[in-house]
Length: 290
Length: 290
Image (cartoon, rainbow over all chains, first blue to last red; front, side):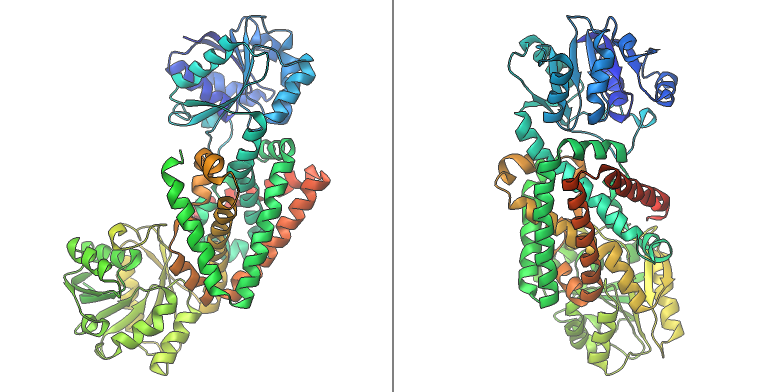
């Protein structure tokens, strides 16, 4: 068992799912929890996801050997300041944020350095649903967890957080924070922005309610699934990783402008070429998508 | 039984799935089939999807009481010309194309009029997979089929094609062809173009093969699923329904340019507003998406 006492700060989908998964895997014994939203705390208690609800983040962290911060990424600094007084010097502090440069900057701003026993981690798992009520015990099985190391890090802390995630069926990969942020801008952050933008554009059409949404099928449903994700969470992620996403968005707009010109210019062979290249690229890599 | 003898011209995913579904539902007795690709014919025979493979579309149609054209939409006129000599005057001719104005124009170009016993239909079902090998018997259950009527149409023909689709669990809805094309430009044609464009842009990044695709997760997989669809089929659909798609694409580019300006200008409340509007619109309509 990695954590005799696990404290989970932030009882949203990821925090609550991690608590469930770690308890089931026998990697967490006693689990304390805290969330700024009393409703999430109530649900997590009611569902047995946490054993005790603390009055504050610091109280939740007291006596814990692993403290997991699972809040929207821009709330990381506040959460760290809040737990700081409760965390014991031996405890490992870790997170689950989708952006890593911003999280490491938040850690540094609160502690004045990157503490040896802080481990930045990002489980590549989730659903479009939010909140403790939607927690999924097997959410991480077969998925990857990226750990972005920093200088002066405690090897034992990294090893234990790695084993924690491996214990719930994940595969741990190490990566530089900037590389992480560039990759996930492409695989996750931009697609979310594009899906939100598409649904928002459709919703503004006159016929949206009467004609368009009632005739949406499976392709629409899957293409827009991630547009049901938490606006707060994705606002934070884009704000924490703006430049890589903006750079890719500019390229995407450029590609769409080219496609519009091809449509209007009747350049059908080129359009066919784009579709074929895209299909081939996706099929080539599909087996690796977890 | 609606069709004692069903002829399916085009043994791709939809044609082969329809044959399977109609046979299982007892709505089709003997099934003849033809495809310009001998490989699809071979697979359809081998899997028992069709009872006999004809040497030509006309031969497949001979003696059939229902002839279903299930080819990429721009191949509709050629398929109609090919079957024409074989179709008996009592037979009902129908199609499954994703664009309806273009199909009706093709019918008119071949027959010099819209024949009373031609029924234009579009089952709102599919997967990203292509070909007879991927045929799914239950593909249409719980989905809608749009029938776009025309003047001078035989009421019995429409009633029988409606019952044919209802027999495999679909719900039939009637709609004007132009309205159909405008709606599906929004719910299906533009999303396919956007998904192809996104994957193509990603595939062009330096780190695509080494970093990006290997780190794609569930959000990426679902957002891009339709980019694995047949390039030929989607080239045809966009070419057959260009203007409605181009109009929406222009709006989408405009919205993305606004979002890029908001990202670069730090207008985070507005970005949050877009995400929230999109999430709310999708959630409001989700229950109706089949």
